[in-house]
Length: 475
Image 1: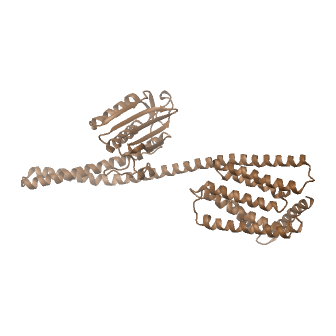
Image 2 (image 1 turned 60 degrees about the horizontal axis):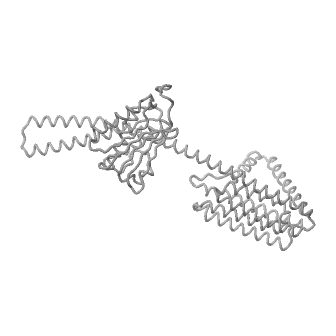
Image 3 (image 1 turned 135 degrees about the vertical axis):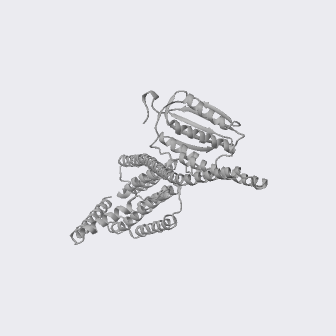
């Protein structure tokens, strides 16, 4: 024990002196400022947690590999002082260096196979890496003083890393392994140091296990909080990017609709003139019938183009530009659904409106959203039933439209809310886009799902319940 303590203290003093001499030399050189700052930056950057978008476990592995390189360098440098001060002999130093060499090969293979190639890894693989490090640390300590080696404190570092990096239930087996390896070191130390009083030994044992578990528990809580926080930030960033992209596409749609509106109106006027010209003359019957058919088809094509332009104009909504005012949901929903029924007399619409009070909404935009969703549901299966519901769930307002069609395709589900994404032959893909922009104006969100067994789809708009209608107004 005294020899081991002297070796540890001497090694620490020598390392501090060498580090101090290095910094003094760097500062005294002509380029001291730049070199010193570069050295500090490189060291800090080496141990900084890397950012790998969408692959959290790979970022953890990359960081572990970097930390392991530092540990390998540390243990290799300590082999010489350990042999000089008697902590290692000729036999154990060979084993010590051999274990370090094995760890070097393991880390090199991990770097080449997984880090460099960016092969996806999971939480279990991170747990295996940390368990391997723990086993190597235990082996190095067993041949260099076991529990009496000052570097046994590295168990706290390993326990902390396991708490931070291993997610969920996978972290519990790791902390059990930490205690098991620590017990092995303590048993080996007690066997070789029989002069140590049992009371003192058990105090050290008890305190060491409490420390390991406490560090693991605190770091596990911290890791859980940080992962949840980063996930929330990532979702906010994705939402902001999506809103910016939708607004940009809306502006682009506005430009297109403006450019196409004039030539379509001109074409429509030309067709009207042609029709009046045909009425003045009396061409052959066959030619007259053919010409009228062509004129009719041209008119239908222009109407289809106008419908698309109308949809594009309606999609030019900005979540910041909606004027809210109190609207009685009882009368409003009744008027909108009655109007839709008049245009679709064969539709089977079932309305479940559980909110009869007033809500703060933009009535024009809400009516447009409802009509778009009902149209989509009816087009999905004209013979099926369309269910519309408006209700309060907890502190949110939920508006949902359910159909009995084939459901959304994977392409639409993956690109939810993006304009011009549709599988319908004559669709524009703007219905869901407009609905999402509307619900975003109310600080809500939109979800689209398929019912089980491909029996239809459900579109749900959910937003926080607004302040009472009598206390608000236009904003």
